[in-house]
Image 1 (cartoon, rainbow, N blue to C red):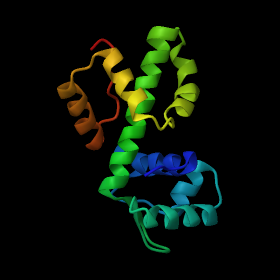
Image 2: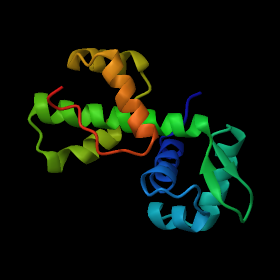
Image 3: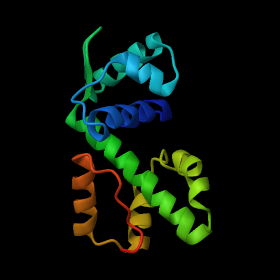
Length: 147
């Protein structure tokens, strides 16, 4: 399923609240504040994401990621981190420069490109699976540099 740039950012925001911060769910007000958008905009997006089975949401209730939503968010974060390391290690960006560029690159839809980026770093599949597993558990400060 192809998602828009905005839909992906909402999933990452929800991941931040529900996994990284450790809440089982959040509300539209928190999302609105985090993304600097109007609450009605968040409500509209939650309806769209619910239709795509990426969030559990009831009007005026809590919002949480479904397993599919969480997996999608983790893949976005994974791509973001791969790009950050690539930009620093191979293109000599500084760490304070890479976030905004990686933020744009993480939305590229090509799985072939990301697979090749994985292969470029020669990260064994077992290590990638451990990183993915840890990220799903909310351990988000994982670096692949030096692996």
